[in-house]
Image (cartoon, one colour):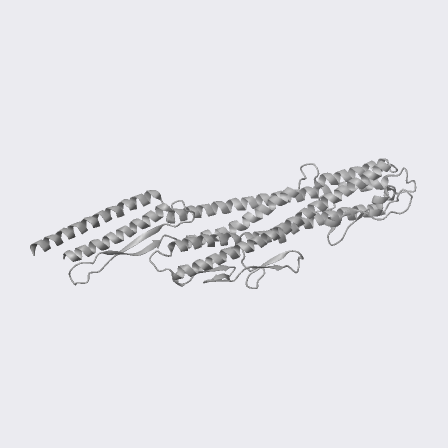
Length: 454
């Protein structure tokens, strides 16, 4: 009898001490980001002698308090948040390139160019007026080209950032694979919980970068998938690759498992690719339309006039049809000789400025957006479009952050460490440990009495 009581007390002391260690571990990690609360699980030890009662208690498991469905939702939202965050960052940079509300903007430069043509119309033989037309026309062309080149440079910068992302994702995948090996080799109870928590944090970052998700396997191991393709399979990594983009020389594609890019790619990678390959080229296309329309309209009117020598004029601007905005410039011959500017429409070339005034009238012609916008208004639409896109991206980002914040708050409520709760649990297990100690003392006293009686 006394020996059985001593054994029961011994198991109780061991089980309650282990529970106190779990509570202490929770308390120590109360401020550790991503830490999930652990809970001791006790089970009764059945008695070995029929009708003689139980055999005490043992710690059967240390349960990790985690809601798998909620964690999957959080991870999915992280992927969407990463995409919106990278899109917003790219649009902020695009906004910085367009400064039409301040000195040096697109619309201002085009208006200044037409002002120079108007001045030339009043003084068609004036050398200063001709030089001013060339200077301001060059400045307008350069401003368009600068905006275009700024967007091209931003695409290259995003491409370089993609390389960094691929390196980071592959490094995280290697860490997840290493933790899978450790998790699969650590026995229960509770030995693998901290490894699983650390792995969850890595997978969360992978989700934000690439939209990664997991499929649980045996022994606590997980496979990590991106767009249905395994990035991590048990302890093996199928790494992302950066390959040359044949359609865009100098830029790269993100490849996984032979798909470039993999279907279902999300996160920051997807956002960067969308900004580089869709958003920014759309703005560049608008600049190309602006440059080509400006050049073609001015060239058509300029070719209808006569230069200062009375000869039929040719084009005023020149550009590469495959990239108008990047290549727009005043013809080199006109820059070298301002007398080639066609200000007149009659043989009285020194006093006839009607062609220059006709070119000035182009500023009021609705040449763009289906015949409803002038050149300056089109610039305004372009700038406004960038601002609207950036504001919409910020709105989407705010919504994603709010939704993720709510999900994380719920997850923290379910799985996070509350010091108040841990304090109550500490008292409860401490009292149980004290009771087990008292039971041990009583059992030993009974044993002494039995020995004395003998």
